[in-house]
Image 1 (cartoon, rainbow, N blue to C red):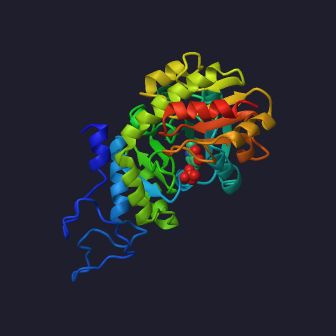
Image 2 (cartoon, rainbow, N blue to C red):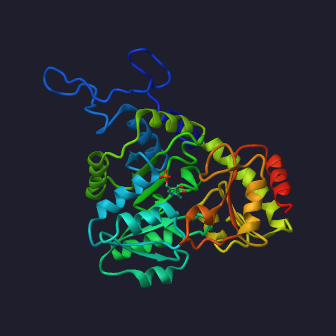
Image 3 (cartoon, rainbow, N blue to C red):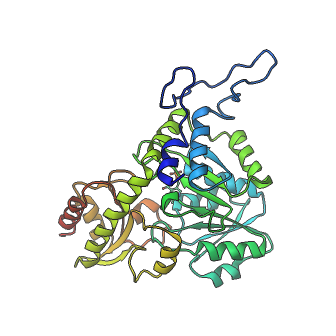
Length: 372
Ligand SMILES: Cc1ncc(COP(=O)(O)O)c(C=O)c1O
């Protein structure tokens, strides 16, 4: 089946009791046992599994060409499950431009447990030079947040295989509609389902999917159940509902972003635009080969510093000034002040998540906000 069909049907089950065409939300925390002690419906207890969670895991696994998937209560919880599964003393190579919440998790929650090197993952030599005897995993985020750097998933996966390392890709910015990391050689793919998959900025969630249902994956599945950072049935329902329109939404986000990026690129108050769809973006050729479109995220530097950037984000009328991305509504944020004092993000950087409003309205809104 094609993506659009999978997105609509792989996460739905017609209810056999009522004939409800849309799978109901199963709120029950526990499930009745049969006389023989078995569980006739296959469910035991909702931390272990739940019909709505199973449907979410099924649709995401199919979209990512994965053998299995595991849903979590946030993207950060999904990331933590992989780091926990690696075990004490493991070394991870992670991007120097990594989503700051996961970077801080590695530095603070896994301090003394996991060793981490932050490396420019666009530089294959730099990655090779950082591999140590205890390196277990290369964590990739492409396009990266917020600089939209592009890493070569095929080349990194080949290198990792030759050294016996695992590769996980945070595919939040692209979704399986535009990029399939497992097909490019990665072992795991991760999403903050809070973003494009949910798509309506009303649910927090995360998910992992695997290329192979092996022993390491079984460890992740047991961490999911035993640590218990699982999403509620309602959150799973909302995410499955969002995924039904994902292919069409992603095309809309990408089309709008192309127009907004072109506008920003010509604007006299804009110093630089980071957008992998531009031919002069350093990662454009790799992006073209591994992504089928460039998604809806753009970062740009305004002329001036933090004050000018803040003036812009404070002057928009349609964009919502908030942290997050991937919703039908457009978001704008002054990224350095969200990331905190140790950020390397330039003070004049603004990150925008292009929604599904009319692109002419978005361009007009940015144009008036850039008149400072
Ligand atoms: C690229 C990326 N990965 C992971 C996360 C973490 O996801 P969550 O906020 O659902 O824990 C985010 C959140 O902004 C993100 O942007």
